[in-house]
Structures are given as C-alpha cells and as structure tokens.
Length: 278
Image 1 (cartoon, helix red, strand yellow):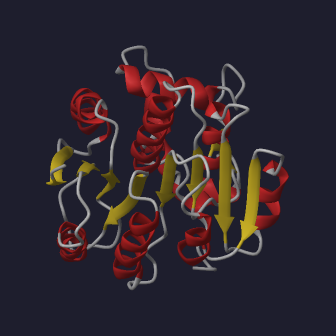
Image 2 (tube, one colour):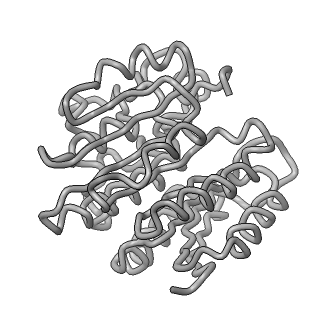
C-alpha cells in the first residue's frame, strides 16, 4: 500500500524473527558453491534510522533489536543476526537498522543475484542506491512483477514475500501468487511473512496454503502477547516452502528464548509447525 512506511516498525520483534530466518536461509544456500538468486517482493528503502521521526514515534525497536543488542547469551542464530546488524552501527550506539535488502547484500557472493521490488514512490528512490551489477531494483508491484523473474537462470534461490497486509485482500493474493510462483519454480525456497492482528484471517491463510497443493511447508511464529481484539500486532510468523532441513532445529533453539525475552507480562509464545509434509 502506498501509504505504508515500514520505518515506523523497523527493528521490532517481527523484524527480529523475519530477518533471523532470512539470514539462516541465505547461509544455507551459501553452503554450496552454486550461485543463487534472491527475489525480495516488498524491499522497502533498504535501511532505517532508528533515531529518526518515524522509528521514534512508537519506538517498536525497543522491544525487538533493542532488547538483544547488548546481550551476550544469544542463541547462535540470533548472534549471527545481531553481528550483521552491528556492521551498520557504531560500537556503542544502536542508531540504524538494515532492512532485508542490506542484510541480503551482506551474504551475496559475486556469483549471486538480488532482485528488489518496491512500489512506494519515495522509498524506491532510496532503494535505487543499492543497484549494481549483482543487484537490480524495480519500481513496481512485487507480487505481480516478480513472477516474470521466475524461474531464475541460477535454478537456486529464495523469494521473500512480506506485504504490509494493510489491504485485506493481501491475505488471498499472497496464496495465489505463491501458487503461480511455485508452478514456475518448484524447487525454490519461499518465505512468506505474516502479522497476527486478527487470528481468523491467519487461520484462513494457513488453510489456503495447506489446500494449495504445495508440499514441504513449515510455519514459525513468535508472539509477544496473547491474541487480542484490540488494535495492534500481537505476533507474527514466517511460512516457509522448501525450507532448509536445518531450519526447524535452529528455530527450536531460538524461538523459546525469544518468546521469553521479548514476551510481554509473561505472555510470550511460539509455534513451530509443519503445515504440509514433504
């Protein structure tokens, strides 16, 4: 949605989960010498100023990256994530947060490619600064336009899909998009982010993916408080198609710790489920 600005939410608990999983998938792809392609359908501006007006309005990062920044007891996956974020900050201050484009760029090898899509007319101007021979930036609807990039010539890769869900039809459009993408690139890994604001919509999303005919689907969710009818996101998750075989075990070590540290008033929880078996 053109009015949506992720800068209000940068570095929050949802970003912690999303970006930790993103990094683990990319590191798994890097275990083989063969090149890969990453497609980011909703790339945003690439980076965020945590001391800027947007991030300071609600300071959501304080219950996300802010609580992890200085800890020395992080699970391995989170330590890797924090180390990447620290590259964009001075040693003693958390002032910037890298979005998925910049995090992916850190793990991009000379043989790999990153394709970034962004519809917002302001954020695309910032994103274009990342363009080079390995990174393409497209101003357009990532759900529709990225389909033309599949299958990538590398025949290996990841598609990251994380719309704002401000438009309710996003919940159905992402499933139709996944089905079309998977038909073109069945061996690829797909990472779909979702918020939990109204649980009924998430249940419908999960049922639609389960009924899609796509196999090998896992779900990882982190909640900071119980489901509520009040306004706001209480949890968020990632639905992964063709996940690395290592990912579930990594999340079994990571999500309980995050639920304990980031959960509010003892209400933190997590889910690790196989929606569709291989």
